[in-house]
Length: 147
Image (tube, rainbow, N blue to C red; front, side, top):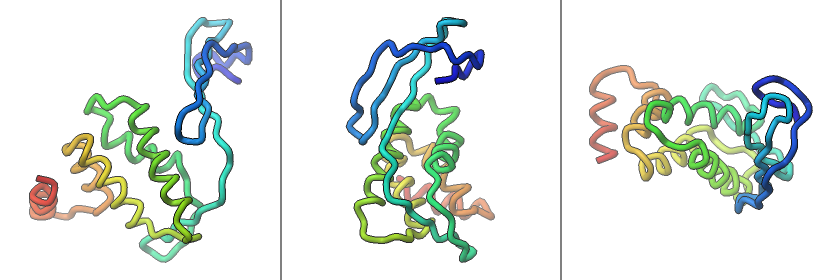
């Protein structure tokens, strides 16, 4: 494993745990710079496709979903582990559905539902991008829905 800090390939596993989301969590330490980082190993599952609003179909990208959620939660002191657990739960639900193609709006609604339980302001920030707010009325409507 390559260290994300110094790019050395001399790292060692300090701790290994099974995470309940079909993933193995490994805490690692770089032997060169001595910094620690966490990696996750998961079984590659069935390929899911996402139907975008414009009609395009793309392969489900877990990291793209994570980036979107992290943008909404970045200034809200929500640990990345909570975001990872949320994404793992969403991904598992998508895999358990019989659909091969999932609408992006369905994924967005799943994220909004989970974010609302964790932090309503993060949910509003996510909704602003996901629902493409165009006016203050859109924000107010979403605020009243979240309350």
